[in-house]
Length: 71
Image (tube, rainbow, N blue to C red; front, top):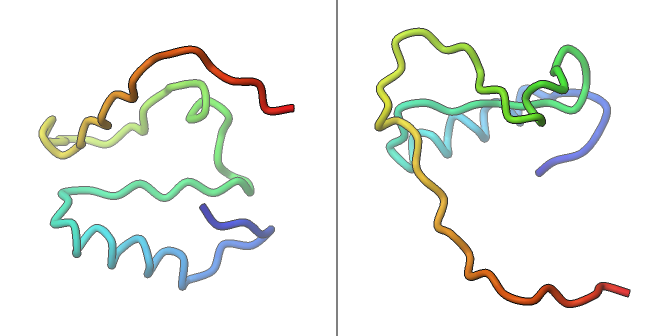
């Protein structure tokens, strides 16, 4: 995750390199600056036409257990 108020060309270039390196079929760039919408953080998927359903990797489930307190 990268922070800052401005989206830089290098950030998009980094995404393109990762997509290429991972041989991914698609990459999604989300910025915390406008025009990103809160719906993405609420679970709404980007509207991408004709997407192969195998394009997205499923994250590995983490073992569930008792969560320790941070403070």
